[in-house]
Amino acid sequence: MKLPCQLIVWNVLPAIRAAIAEELNAIGVSQLEAARLLDMTPSAISQYRTGKRGYRIVFEGEVKESLNRLAHDLKADRVDDLASRICEICAQIREESQSGGSCARET
Image (cartoon, rainbow, N blue to C red; front, side, top):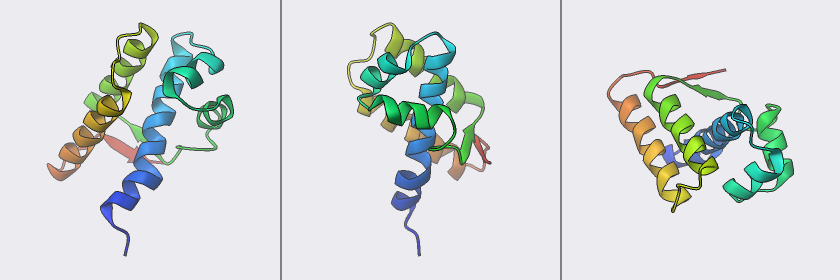
């Protein structure tokens, strides 16, 4: 039996990181800078951007907008607590899923 926490750690968090890395790339942030902003290694960012990590879930709707907003805020240095922002997005995903909505699709 897989606990919900396991699914989040193994699937949702990597997908969140991948979506943020992808949006940072789209708005002109280098791989090295994205790694610094997300407190990761450049190789981890590369794996997210090439689909080797975090590729199982694609976010849609309001969750995608929240992820994009976070990436823009990171670039503009408007994020004081990255962990809290990611937790808020994770809660948004759980809430959407529990209400029967579709905020993501598996690939």
